[in-house]
Image (cartoon, rainbow over all chains, first blue to last red; front, side, top):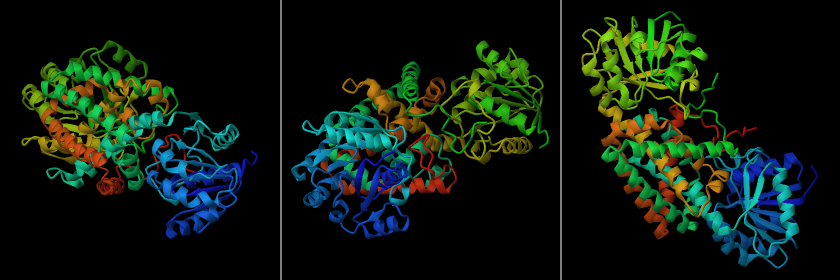
Length: 306
Length: 306
């Protein structure tokens, strides 16, 4: 593939930035990838493992001369980071971000964008429960969605160029309204994460079931929840605080629905339970058909079907 | 390995029975494995794929002369099945089951046990979201727990023999009180399943987010929930109806806890969220250390870390 950006600057060096750097370099899409992280320890690690072509000690240095800047910090830090780098952006640079919430990031970032620079908010639907500079891998985005929520005045050429770059690292891109993005993600990601955190917290609190047993006999179901609940605490704190309304809306619906099923259990209404569980199977089928997961059995992790 | 049982009869031919048959035959632990399922279609499929040495058209025929009978039917069907086979059991036969709830199965099965036969309730902590006779595979139980909840008068030799057989198909066995088993499983499996079913149901009901989008952009979190919520509806209906009290107890605690976190989001209490999410990470670490899962990143399914 040919070079799309001369210099890509990654601000924040966690799982997403690390994976982007490895993927961009592997695909030869950038002449140079620079990186900056607020923590000296993270910068040292990134240097040690050669995560980027150059790790800088300030954000200003990292973005100098970059034609693409990617904000890879928690949602709550986007505004401050943008305020810091705004004055140092190259003329005509494109800025994008990878935050899981879009409207609040737009509100925080937009005021600090200098004249002539292009802000294209984005969100890769990819990740693992691991975080930090060592967690990245080049194939993270392959065949995954990368949602863009361009603003009404977004430059078409800048958007096209970003699209080509993301396609180059294997992602499928799509465009959405920011508020709609935040609602869809509240359903598919934010509420499920809070629920998983909660269930793991309940297990942690139980006195009658020793923690050791819960861990030892961690069956399918709970094991999946613990994986979700191991995700980065700072990132998720910010997601909930910045997508407050949509998340609370979905959690409210969830609670209502849970009460209906609890009541069915209490009343012994087996037919209602059976019908409900049959319906949810169809959704799973749809996800496999949509190519977002495989049909391979996954509860017995580490077990290979022979 | 040498033969432990001359004839093993599997009643109900779903994922667990199928996997047991394949594993027992691969390990040479039984001279003959017979099988019976209520549905003629299931029996035909089992014959077609050679799931057992012999598929019988009645449960009585399957258990005739068997020294081990394994009840692999939904929890709510255990009593009826036992009533049917009780008069046909060989003298001194061992009967075990694989139900996810133990106290109610004991209550349903025990009255139908003939004099001289041994009932040893059991529960393999293994499975996938797939069901039916084609879902089984020989390695399902490898390195997985198989909990036994023997009764006060359980014959020590019969228990030892069953233990050796289960070890022979790769399982680790442990012994528990039935009521305690039901509480531990309510935490680690039953409540998480109901929660996953509920969240997937919420997504299904939403009018403002089209089903297609929820499926298309099914992010980490929701995708895990849909896999859990694709589990067998009959099996899970019975689990909830037969472990009613423990499940409702845990769901009650879950709801309380969820309200605390919802309140923290509403009040913007980031510190409380951060502390909570940091705590749940430690539990995940414990599960990996306990060997019940691997540290391999698992959100980007189908993506190989390179």
